[in-house]
Image (cartoon, rainbow, N blue to C red; front, top):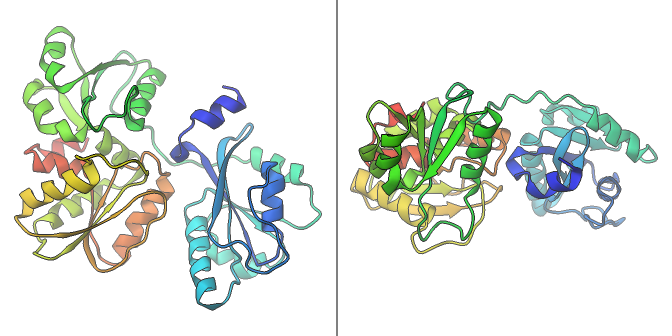
Length: 359
């Protein structure tokens, strides 16, 4: 893969995230622009010029596809400054690497829980790139199909083509699972829910993976001996924590009228009339609880627990890194808010044995 193809095709959740941090007027934005060889960030002598984190995708060989992020100074002041600092700390917490720009690192090191490089004005930008490129990142993210598939297996991927399917392509979780099959030298069969029984009658299948919205229909058509899971559960298994999600499942039955539920997606997309997050998840919870619940919906990489939610419903996280998903789970756990995964909730609502699906 050349640099351009990696830049254009690698999902954000599969990139190395590098955050540039430091104090105000340390030269962070100047360095970010030089590092990216573009005018990504506004540069000024006025303290506090950078407000929200600003990110750009790029390639650093041999490290690979990355996202670099410029942030506000950690010594920002005032009410707005405190908000900027919180966003900077959130960006640092979910990064893979940090670059400290300027002096004073030792006083702030305890707030940077990731490997950190130091840069001072006048240092070589290319030398910094070379150090980062040579860094051996300790990635603890498991493969999507670790322990579930191996060479020669036949994996059935059930991909409904309905009003919520993007025109002319598969959604990202489906693409990534099929690519993982190819990496493992396993065979990926792709069909729609109504074709499951016919396919399984002709070809021995090792594992079936379905869109969560079709769980019940696929389970009914699939031979009982074939294990079934969903794309969302696979990503929850890869990037989240199944024990946390199990506790979230149990908490669903405790919801009461008027309780707030936060539905969190890692991506942003145009909402369809039968959108999974804003329509199908609320309907599933209504069926499971019989209660009139309140909902708040958030999408994208920014995550904030506002109000007093009694449950968080988190997507699989295909557009998020493992660190980002785990940070969300930790934030909810710190406030004793249970979290459940999209796929697990939808499986439960369709009468599927969730424990068997959480492979």
